[in-house]
Image 1 (spheres, rainbow, N blue to C red):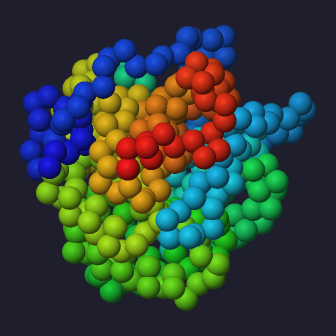
Image 2 (cartoon, rainbow, N blue to C red):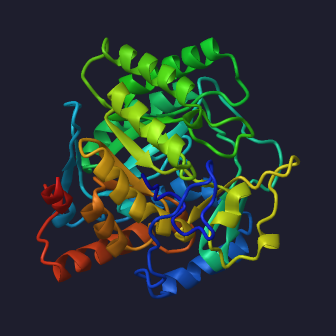
Length: 408
């Protein structure tokens, strides 16, 4: 069977880099530059370090929350994300979530409702605090593609700190109809399987007790170590172990697995079968695209400008608008393969009409991050665009809206 991953590739890449079957037209929904966007560009000049701006995101949300009038997502965007395994559903004010990496420390979580989010995946969290990669810079923007290079390397304060902050903020978040998940991952550099299983289990248990859902990040491309989701046998053992642990935990909460966007046909087939057999609640599609395989993306950025971010020459992970040509066909394809699975789409989503396209293709919600580096009040603007797209298509509200089910 064909594989939609890396659908914008030309020529089709070999196993391990994705094989294209569908190309989304270049005329994607786009937004007009506003005065706020120009202000954002001025802020970038004033604060030129991209990672510093990243750390200011939570403070930005907090500042917005401090002054009335408070923002409320239009009621037409409210929806309930449900799971085939009868995990607790997520009642959210809107379908746009902040992807893991956007708030690594669980700071000021409830304030993110002011920015228009319906949910947040916090982290990714390792068992112990982790400094990430030692070199600088670890983040670069690629403006020609409205994209980002990221090689922060899973820096985070550890699962105990994150879980404690999430637990303290969860009630306030629920009152704003915002769901909070925790993304957990293995410690970079650990290769002993028994230790990987033990650390993932410990982080999973702590996250499960605090958050609405848990996201397993086994596909980070910028730590310098092997991604666990491409080692299918190890992936199977990790998932079987985690899902067996979940049997002893109450209440039943959703367990999502975040996958890589560059898998070839055989690997993808095996991974989809593995996650289905394990009985996970859903998938996050996808993590960032490995920068070392950037030649498989049709980028406006000159190859020489996609510079290494590490002393070893790694280019980290690429995110942003450039990935949408992969995301939409992949959602359609994987929805056909796994009609029961809850799917969160992530990659290149920077316009509200794209959100509706993805919901109609089979996504239950979407995750964004890089768009915040290019659009002022990005999610509020995307909520407006989503409402306009719904009106144009005769969609009154999102609750229960899943036209792809007609093709099951």
